[in-house]
Amino acid sequence: LLTVEDLQKSYGDELVLDGIDFTMDAQDVQVLIGPSGSGKSTLLRCVNRLTEFEGGTISLDGEDVMAMDVNELRRQVGMVFQDFNLFAHLSARENVALGPRRVLGKSKAEANDRALDELERVGLADQADSYPAELSGGQKQRVGIARALAMDPKLMLFDEPTSALDPELIGEVLGVMRELADEGMTMLCVTHEMGFARQVATDIMFLEDGRLVEHGDPERLFTDPRHERTEQFLRRLT
Ligand code: ATP
Ligand code: MG
Image: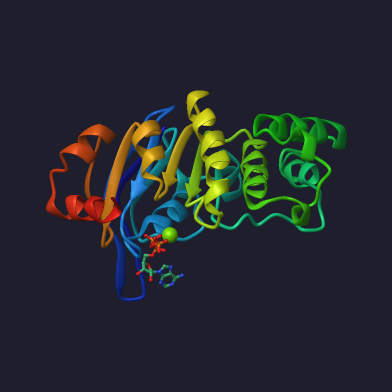
């Protein structure tokens, strides 16, 4: 479903991604870990072209993302960020309905129904008319997930979706992500939640200084990392 070949990305003189290669099949849950500044967010941003890259190829379902209409690409690739980016003056339902209405061209009634379905999927049917200021961080993030899902994405990108949350709210967001994975959503996730990574990921990639140091099955990576750098990184986390 996603192919990344020899991806190169620089900011000025600094090479931030240096020859990244990986593929994802439909329904894979690919977790990306690595130290701060290793290029995790940049890699996600290249996939939906929030940032340009100089070298290599990214294809979605066999189509070169550079050849795709960027709005169509972003419809097919949902993204959930650390901070929720909800519109404060719109209710949860209106936030979720906005994309179906504006981008998919659905009628107001259709977009509303779709929004309610997606809010129900993330366990927030009863908060549809609440405004972001009335929601907890975990609820806001679940609205953010519902908003991305309402576009029928082929792939979901998550960039540290629980990092801005109080510890007691992390579980509800990870629970929604786990359900999505169980339903067969294809997901590329940056997270420091190693329990989630270990239980839900089909593969974990360790990135350092813009290079893919190693990747593998979660159990293997956690119990028997092949590279010293991976081992050091994992040891520091536990
Ligand atoms: P973190 O865990 O802190 O989120 P990260 O792995 O997501 O880190 P990136 O945000 O992808 O790392 O950054 C990779 C490198 O690119 C860093 O050296 C960073 O300083 C640099 N960088 C990121 N965004 C920009 C930008 N807009 N302009 C210039 N340099 C940038
Ligand atoms: Mg980041």
